[in-house]
Length: 199
View 1 (cartoon, rainbow, N blue to C red):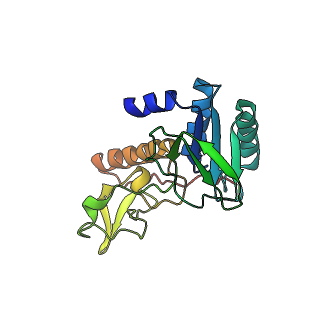
View 2 (cartoon, rainbow, N blue to C red):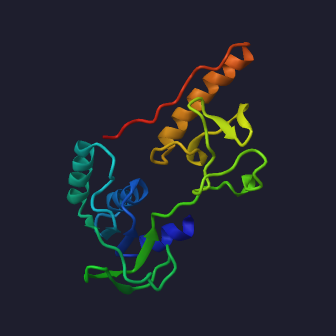
């Protein structure tokens, strides 16, 4: 992290690939800390944060515009930048819509993978195609042979259909604590988790 911070501090033209929550936060934090830098976000989606409330997205867009962040959506790069992510070194890339982007550092803010390889043997449960753990609304793990009543999962590893964000993981944890507490008191767990509808 210190090396990356040093590389970013010495760079003037920053390219961020991905305009989800992570990419947008990185862009805002970079411009907030170093207003003189030129930050460009590139993402293939037709809109920012699809699925989130339109008024929230509009407000976020206004904030990023005020910071001077250039947002290029509905496009991607024709080729990966020639330098390693997070390492400074001047380069020029071309987007699929023909625009040239000059940068001297870039970050990949998309394509996260779930850290669930330790469950790949299938003894507890069969992972989804995305490597997530199937859970019930109680956040108990759904295994091949039924639900594991005393095994819970929270956070990014779950197959809950929502953005993978720390705030949601904390809400998962609250549900699990309530359910474990009920079990310790000899009661049936009853706290359920319902993903927030963003539209």
